[in-house]
Image (cartoon, rainbow, N blue to C red; front, side, top):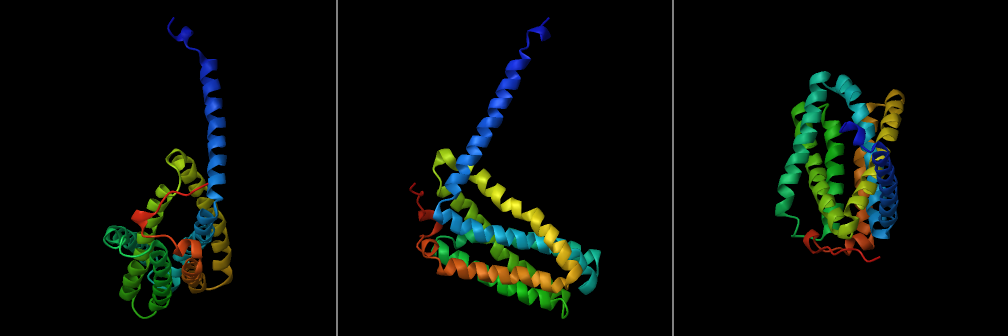
Length: 229
């Protein structure tokens, strides 16, 4: 008898309303993301995410041709994670000592240069390869923390969920396309060429941030204020 009293149609209506509400909130988040400052951060980041997806697809082929196959691939993934973790741990000691724009541009440029050295070091020493890999990706790990804090600080509090959902959707959209492109490029060119594209992309991104006035005008991360609309 209790089951007969359950109003199923009401539940469907609420679910439909929630679906519509989610779409509306996502659209509102996308409008906020269109702010010039957020756009200046997101467009290059989307491109870098595209390139990173390419190298993830290329790594197995790279490990087979220039390393010891599965063991090299596994250690490469492990050191990517290690570098990211180390960067996230140490950035807290430096994030208030320099302007945000300087830290991000320098971090990307240093990461890109170290990445390029890492790619060619595999032919000299696999140990040096892993050390340079961890160093290169430690800058990315540190920058990821800065971005996380930045995207929490810039939008209004009531818009945080919508903005972050929109940002993640935009950045994640590049991943499958990059994976597809990486698969094609690996068949047509050397894996080293594909990996170098990521390092070059990081350097270009760092240069873009370095010469972008709106990004360079930002103070250190703890003093960043909310955007005006």
